[in-house]
Image (cartoon, rainbow, N blue to C red; front, side):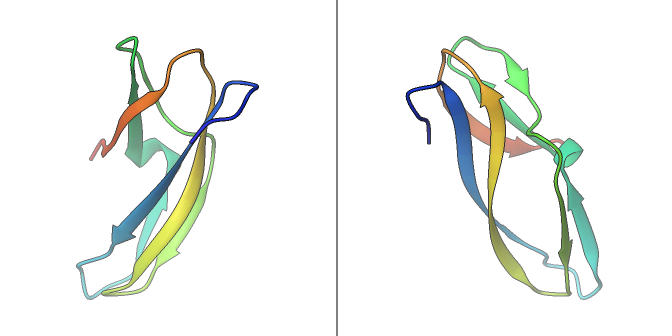
Length: 74
């Protein structure tokens, strides 16, 4: 998602397939932009219970180029 100011956002759905609790932080995700650059989202922290699925909207700041893909760094 984007707006007229060039802010880039993504809605991500994640599932904790473990039976134990886990924490997802901004450093675990990475986006690739249309110009080839990669960037982590702005700071966030998300707690997951075992086998829980959550959706989150994360900000990747401002860019002239759109986000092509979001992937896990770990």
